[in-house]
Length: 341
Image 1 (tube, one colour):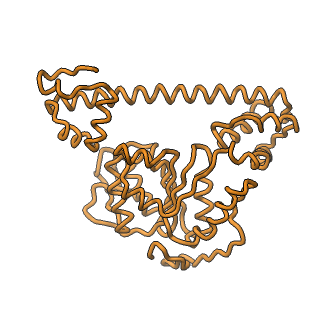
Image 2: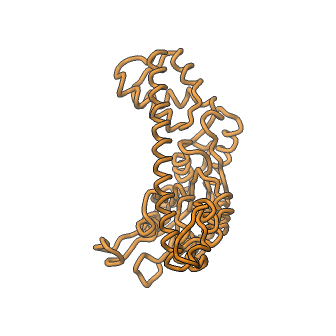
Image 3: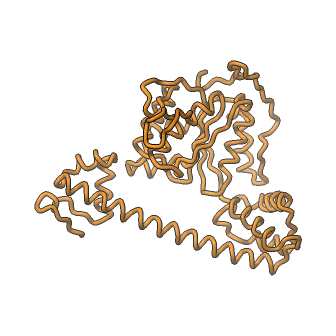
């Protein structure tokens, strides 16, 4: 099937699935966001790749599933892969599969996400974190509609619709040499930017009541007004977590103004702790990366091109890292020791 086909799919024993929609199943009281959402009922009927942008916690995964359910591929599988959750070897196996013995722990053949999502939709979450070396392989898979499992000498034909998502600025990552521009253009056929909750606050009460009904929590009018004034940096995910916490901490009780204030204080603490943990984790990662670069420069006697090749990163990215970490590559040519500027 070509990428711009709008015909129902009939594959093997799969039944054709034709969707006639009066409206997209997700709506908003914010007129601008709702107009964009409702335009997706037409996008869903095509095989175009969709790139979902926007901050973390804005519900991009829910949006991806809605597009799938409104598409001619709805009778087939919706498979989600988080590109930031696995190591490079494992993410390649997760996407393309592997054959027995391909690497330590590969005790049998395994299908990857492309094959598991055959005739359906493959959702690539956090695509901005996909390792640079795998981006070329993903691009080839999308361009040629075929994959090669890890350790295999044969290619496998594929038929999937791609929806990708990221909270990162891919344009900046392209400028920094961390994301391929050709892959970006291949994914960015149709793009949708999900707004943060504070920019669609008209939906706040509907979302709160939806989560409250699911979790059997009651909120007073004053509590709702108090919560509505919060900035919600964690967006819809933070709101759902707060309702879940209310159900756990105050079971069977109505959430009044005082309880809402307590829940918000806890939410602020959790957000601050998460940010602190992320900062600490990033510092450790940067220190490890810095030491790896130093080691490679020592081995290669300051040869930047060879070092960049062995580290599997563009030379421009290596130059940025040298400036960022204060490493003078010239000193490795002289005595193998580094100098920090």
